[in-house]
Length: 346
Image 1 (cartoon, rainbow, N blue to C red):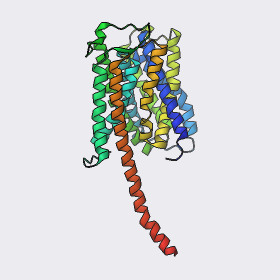
Image 2: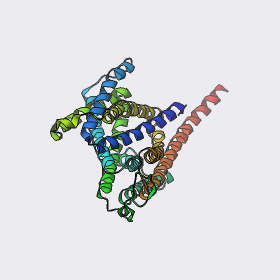
Image 3: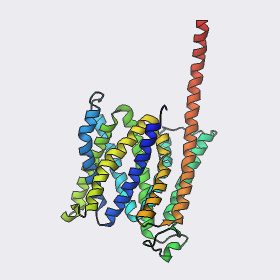
Image 4: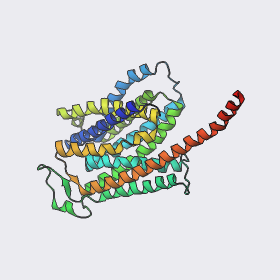
């Protein structure tokens, strides 16, 4: 894969940006800002930022935009819009820690969709296929644990009192279960987004232009939704200042920068390298949430996140073995040719 130093730093920054976005969106939605308006503002700002920069960067290597490519961009926008709607709804009903933990389901769901669309082959005699299959099942089981079981608060501050009802084996907190269900749906749609994005980048490799059209179509879809759902003009207000700062951060860093960096790293190193950084978000989210926001860290989140990460790395291990097998096979095919050439030289 060559030098991975820059992609490594890029993915660390991207994960930090995403966790901060999850935490900020939780705060502004708790203050009354709806997710539809938040999505519209952030993607409109991102599209405005990317419009000049993307076309300037790709001014020399810019494939023609055809009806087929526009259709692909629109499909990407629909999937991205649904993922954001489900994701922000899940954050609103649950917590930033659960939202970050559930992101580790994306590699497992991506594997399932890749098998369904015959982009991935299953060989039950292969350890790598077994690892990917079992890892996917384990990850989904971990998501059920994190969603249905809340448990006691392991880490808390004085500003986060614990209700005794939250200490039941299976939490009766309906909002927590609804939030986890929305986050699971977000992971399914995000997995489909990754597959469609990878297919589009093969035909249209100008990554930033793809990200621009993605943000542009998400902004249009969210605007249409807001016109139907949001009838109160005061809902569009960017006061208090936290709303304005969150929207600007989401547009510039959360959408334009974070999606652009992730797309570039995906193109440079592949999906396996990119997905390795998801568990880092859990640690960042827990530290920031507990230390700065007074959030409680529950036993269910710890157990569920641990199980999800175990399944995640099982899928990752299986995928790495597939890459090694392909690499060895390609070297083996080149060996006879090299041997033949050396004999001719003698």
